[in-house]
Image (cartoon, rainbow, N blue to C red; front, side):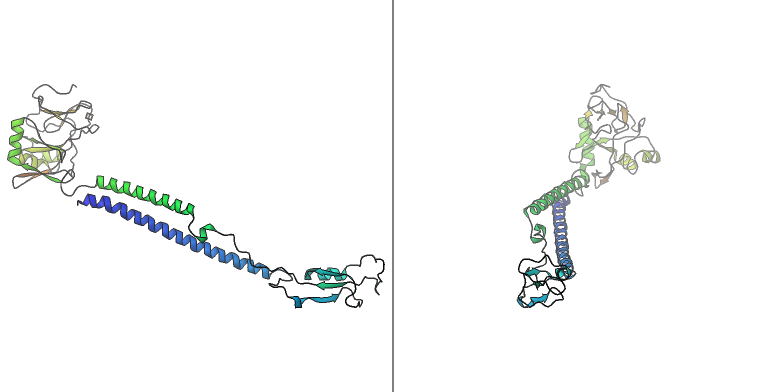
Length: 327
Ligand code: FES
């Protein structure tokens, strides 16, 4: 398994685990916050109950009933109408003037009607108000499951996409474009080029190897093709990236002209990939090469920017016949 394949598999898995972890932590925190909020609400309500004047009792207590006269005049118990009132109303009832006497009633000594008032504690059994059932607290609802499912799917998709992009852009460490490629035996490559009158092409490395003769000195040549010119000169081979520097088409070789000619917009390059015409802004990209034990190694992970317009480094840069693409 290549490092790229490992990355493509590992990155989405790690991303999905991370997203799951974040969701679980967020859920746990929210649940704890909800529980704390519920407890606070209960405590606040209990405090509010304690502050109510007159207070409330939790259970009905029959023994707490008391009987007091409603006025200063002594009226025997059991006489007069009985009323059930709350404690807070007691003072008002005892001090309020008596209603007009009814037929058969006797006035009391101070002119007030004697009324027996029975104070009855409220029979209401109060309990702290429980907050309304909260679906978020009591468990995972369908909506939560759906939301988290969507979130997870989205996270996994984005992670997979990111992993694929990284894997695509990641330079290959061995084999294929982006890595150092063993093109073949140097002498055999040269013989093949001469016999076929066309460059050696590597589909895996997306490069051309072409024979190269130049009269340039090393310093000048290195200023044009940094860290590559000397090796080109010594090997008698030069390596070009197949991609057109105009808009990226693959530039084919024209056998009749012995130039590279781009069919997309007509850019043309000499046998060393240097600009000769068309809309391209400069010459073709190059790759450094090394000859190791007679084998030509091309480093496709290091692109060298093409030479500027007007550069002609080969001994004979002119076309050898008709062009394949019109200017
Ligand atoms: Fe080659 Fe436009 S892509 S000339």
